[in-house]
Amino acid sequence: MLSDVLRDLLEEGTGLLGEHLMLVVTSIVIACAIGIPLGISAASNVRTRRFALGFASIGQTIPSLALFGFLIPIPFIGGIGQHTAIVALVLYALLPILRNTVTGILGVDPAVRDSAMAMGMTKGQLLRMVELPLAAPTIIAGLRIATVTTIGTATIAAAIGAGGLGVFIFRGIASVDKLQILAGAVPAALLALLADAALGWMEKRWTVKQMIRQ
Image 1 (spheres, rainbow, N blue to C red):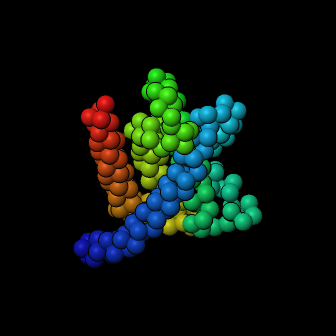
Image 2: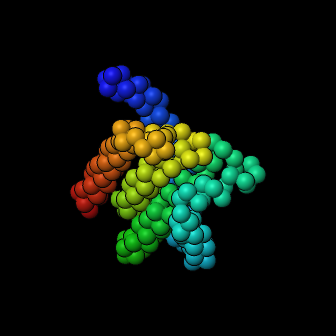
Image 3: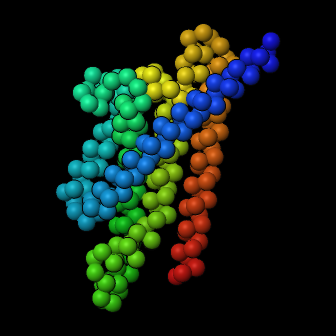
């Protein structure tokens, strides 16, 4: 009997894991597409930096379940389903990516920047060949935080019909079924640990690479 239950959970869990990964990957890609270019722009403009970081910080202050609820009645981006969950997850992932991009670029040694300019580099070349490579470990650290946080927050997306591993957790809470709760919580935790380890390895590898170059 127990083996049948476990087999059913495994079969359903494979699909839910795929949904969870889709939510996380889509949200992180969109957050990077917004946060990194915006962080590059904000690093060179104080007014843009204050506005962008302020807006992203506001999104972090809203409780996750409440944010999902606030977005439901909004036209075009709201409603029940994955698209609303992705919008909320992007808002949560945006701050660490944006902030670390700004911090990484502003943290480049002014002497290095001046030397590059003295060699005749344009601003575009300076950004691509000097600032971004040196800021990359800090940016990856922000991506690491955003990814791990998003994996956990995505479990709440099941509350608005977005699927994912949170389906098991909410179903288990409703039926007081510990096995269902663990079937959602354990894979989500392992996924977060795996993502943290992989991005941590990338961050260290890039840092070592930059030290060798210097």
